[in-house]
Picture 1 (tube, rainbow, N blue to C red):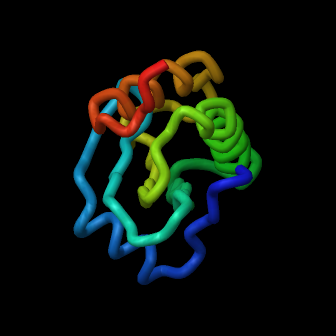
Picture 2 (picture 1 turned 90 degrees about the vertical axis):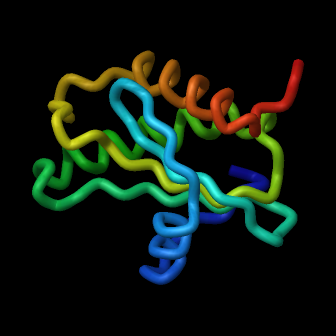
Amino acid sequence: MKNTEMLKKNYEFKNVLTKGKYYSGKKIEAFITKNKKQNNLLGLAIGVKRGKAYIRNRIKRLLRENYNKLEEKIEKGNSIVFLCKKEENLKEITYKEIEEDMKKIFQKAKILKEE
């Protein structure tokens, strides 16, 4: 996460969720919008009702790890918020599923650099 800062404030999340464009995968959802900074802003939001803390933290770790893997290929200047779909069972989500979803979302959003 060299070129990425985390979103922490409530108004930062609200800004991305209201003004951002919605993209959906099988297990995760993303809101992406442009920002005026030289780096990306990343937010991870998993609701308290979705499960106990260790389950929510596991999903956040998986999301962060997959993002780190793709970070070099993502264009700079974007604010990204990832959410988990409500109907998904968080205990059964795997690293590979999140990786596939994240690649599809970034390709749909056209922020993945060409190799």
